[in-house]
Length: 321
Figure 1 (cartoon, rainbow, N blue to C red):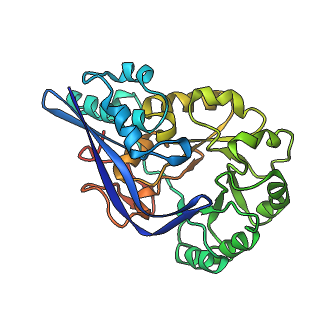
Figure 2 (cartoon, one colour):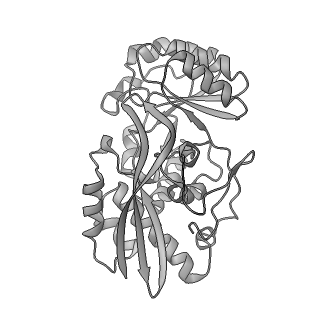
């Protein structure tokens, strides 16, 4: 078997801003694994928040034995972007070699479209209202916040999209005091969920706090080893393939989190349809799905995922799985 890695850049449709900064393009690593003339594909998005770079993740992947199996991979690399791309490429390879879809290999029912959030990036209240008005036809909007003066932004988005369900992502940008002040207003404005309000290292402050709106762990939740640290703080777990290190661990995390009573949120980094395709399987039946990466791009893979009023559709075998 051979493993190849390429760096790909996808132009964004518009500037994308969160509390940590802005970007105009998505830089990803594409992994190609080939065995006996059959090729599988995977994609990952190295993330600086987790001390990942294109160079460091590529080095991790290229340090693997050429004949690595999906089972062996779990112990050779930690949870993170590198393992994700290889794990998903190996799933794709196994599916193509067997003539089955990945969901059939997992004995899952045929996947259906899932309604996905559409993300409005952090901006002035006026610009965020304009974004909300433009996308008010969407059933689920996710708004990026994470500053001490977010209340006008939240009001503006609700005014711009009065009928959409809204979820809020603070990206670790609030203090316990800011979150406590905002919580009643989240309820008043009909916010359905708040993601990672506090920094992962300071989230013990959530223990004992009122949670009138469900609180979702993102930066605090990576793989199954993260679950004990979430107790008493969070209601929902955001599972992202780039955090879990692939579909294999993501499926195990979903099962373990559900067994402990957590709701499931399936999210993504800003990547192409290839990165989202495995996550569509993971998102089946999830409380919330946020796989809008391709909708934020100005360009995508040759055989992209399909998005319509029913949501994000499962991938074609030409794309993945």
